[in-house]
Image 1: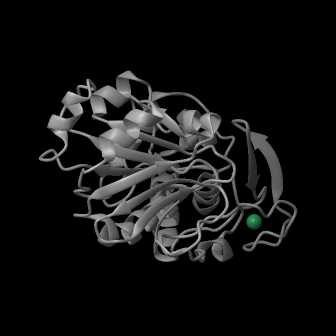
Image 2: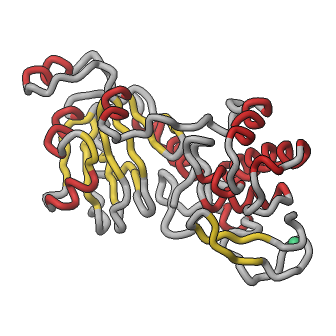
Amino acid sequence: MPELPEVETIVNDLRPQLVGRRFESLQLTRDPAIRARLVRYPSADKFIRRLRGRTITSVLRRGKYIVMPLDPADGAEKLRANGDVTTTDQRVIVHLGMTGHLRVWEPEEAPVKHTHFRALLDSGLELRYDDPRQFGRLVVGSMDELIAARAFPARLGPEPIHGDLTEAEFERLIRARRRPVKSALLDQSFLAGVGNIYADEACFRAGIRPSRWTHRLTVRERRSLYEAIQHVLENSIAARGSSIINYVDGFGLPGGNQEKLLVYGRSGEPCLRCGTPLQGTRLAGRGTVYCRKCQR
Ligand SMILES: [Zn+2]
């Protein structure tokens, strides 16, 4: 599943291709079940209507979400005429789920299998979304509207990188609740964007077992974890993300960070630091890998 570094890479790749571009014509898959699953809010038809003629003003990342605010200047009147009253603060939000891809294509290129959404831009290029497993989501609306419709989380934790999270804030958050470290790291209302890959990698780097309780961590361990989280995320962004299932960047190329993972997906293989076979277990409902010797 794409996590923070993968989504950050895609967003950076898409930004120059999308900012200032207007949606000309849009097309969603005809399959009603896929339409309903993919477009979480509003309806599939309203989704198309709200995007048509609107301009993308920026391409941002929030946690694992791709966020594209739309120009309020055009389209607002048309929306009211359609009886779909909206505020001007509209944004398209995409969650790639497990296997989603959002990419810009030449219109002549044949759509790949499982392409569910296509939008012709005024640049003459097409923005397309494909997703074999269909866990991804597309929504459009104001933040208030999306949160009220449960199409976007009401509580999303701080961004762990780019200096947005201070050590004092991390300290406060991790001490606020008693639970295993792994559960905390996976909780998007604790930190936004960390998933299974980087939770395991951060715990290894910090020398902390994922099953340790947050309130039992020492001051030094909390600091190590704080630094490890940023390190694993920033290093993965530098390597353009980890391609585990089918992740590719905004240009369709795999990332390079999967080669650099120290524990994730390596259960039973020797620890790269001490040689002990890595331990695989389940924690917080997810496969978890750690080193019994290096992590305490
Ligand atoms: Zn080890």
